[in-house]
Length: 342
Image (cartoon, rainbow, N blue to C red; front, side):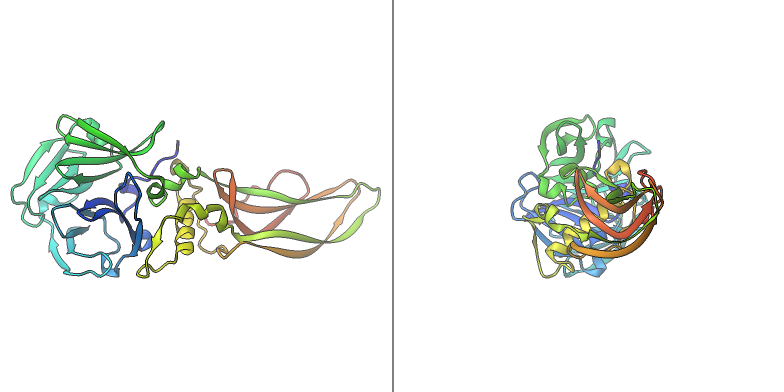
């Protein structure tokens, strides 16, 4: 089963809850999402990330704190607004607060998860390590893809084979005292790295035979043929992905462009996250349309010619139609992949 890309493999991605809503940051897309609640998906707004707020390793915040914290390397940035960089200040992380696998904020405390040590460190201040305390981490609580705080609870995101993307609320990470489990709304799952594989199906790619010519006669024949094919991005096939996303002016991408960027990112992922491990940035991502190309071919007696086009899609639906075509003399698809690979 495909799953959401964990934070360790998706730097610049973060989830946290503030007093005025839940946030999902996608630094790779240059934007972030805010919604009323992860579980309801109501009032989704997508805003642009200020350049100074992009490229963070971790993003965290809490309901009781007006600030948002962006950790990058051994320092962190404190802002009040990710779109404007309002109130920006930069501090060095205390040595005891560096190198965490995950960072989260719950109420007035910061928590740093160190999986290798099997502990979570609680501190009042990331720059001074004041109030620092190491707490044993229950193995069950090391399975999260993302971590954040909700009120007095610890929250972690998982993907269940039966129930999909969820977040679990724990009263304590010491004894894994589970308080509640909530499903994440599909409109938000689609925005997460790898999420389209859960909401639309894993990506696929390959050659599709779009025309076959056969010479059934006993003499060679030279033909001039017109091959019609679709080229570009069939955005209507994934229009439902962003139908409830209100993309604000601060975002560098419009609604349609953002959907294309999310699909493009999905194609780039490895198969374990429902991707195809290919780079499609140089492909034609404009609206799909029909194009024609004329070619001439000479077929020997009893010979056939197969015309192939490379396509990518999600689930069972082709979405991106590449311009390049190839010809073979047997019905076996070409072995080459016409796209750069990761």
